Image (cartoon, one colour):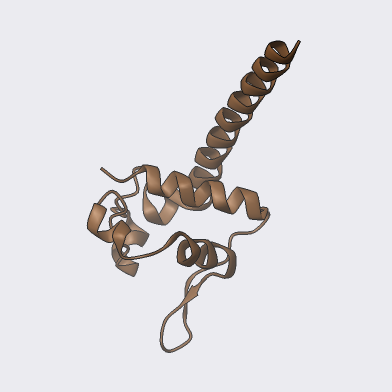
Length: 109
């Protein structure tokens, strides 16, 4: 009986993680790709205008923590003159944002 219960939990957890990963990509495509690009390289019209970094670059990813990325998505980013560089993500839960950060980390080559 314990084996069946453990197997059920493992299968359910795997399905939830897969769904979460799918949701993260969907949220990224909806919320981030316009500027950051579908591939995370920032090679979009808006990305070029804002000087967005290439998130596939390991050195770029080493330059920020998950907490910093989470805060940027949650609160948005402004420059030194208080101009909005990135709006806060709307309609995303804390778990959605954490999954989004993990998705961005997965873009590293």
